[in-house]
Image 1 (cartoon, helix red, strand yellow):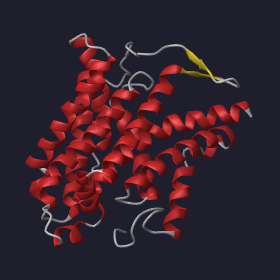
Image 2 (image 1 turned 135 degrees about the vertical axis):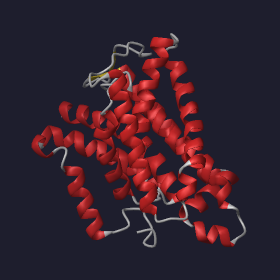
Image 3 (image 1 turned 120 degrees about the horizontal axis):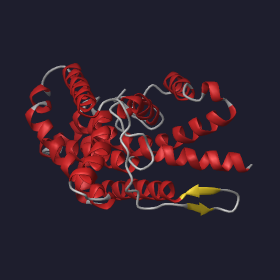
Length: 288
């Protein structure tokens, strides 16, 4: 029982990163209908940004947690205006190939500068273990889970309880209908893309004290995150977040009971979900 609960908590922590990344991907796809394959590279840039900020400027984790996501929001907005916006009138495949190329360029530049070895990061804000009675758990991982839940809840409240959120959600889930009501969805494209990129950067910074920071860390994660978004439903914010936590727990329990299939379970689940609901658990049929 103790091993089960500990693995379940491990799964929630892993799922918190999936949820943050899938949330950004889902919002971007819903608004722009762009599959942002550079999302994993942005996650990597967030982690390396925290390392560089500590090594070069001597700024610790809390500075990185604020400055790196903000910088990536601006970089994402600039990327959308300069490159992605110019290809919007073309087949979506062009923007997919563009973001795929950007991911490869970022990964190779980081490999050229820092090599393939993991970079150390010794500025974690919390050390030690928390006693949960049946088991102990690293304090920082509990913090990362709590912050991820807070961010996902905050985004949900923003999208459901504010006028701006209502417009963005409507533009994400029903863009044609929203434009028919006279709302200019185009003005929200750039900030929404920047916001989605910032969430990936935030996940990268959060991962820095507990993950191996190397140039391939995003590439290893992004395929699973895409599966999470497909399972939750393309364009469904709630579905992506929920699927992120579910997949994290599924992988953790799989590593305990079915270690040889732990990394395959998510894709088996994706295949089953697509057979039953092609739009995903919470997606719309017309999106599929």
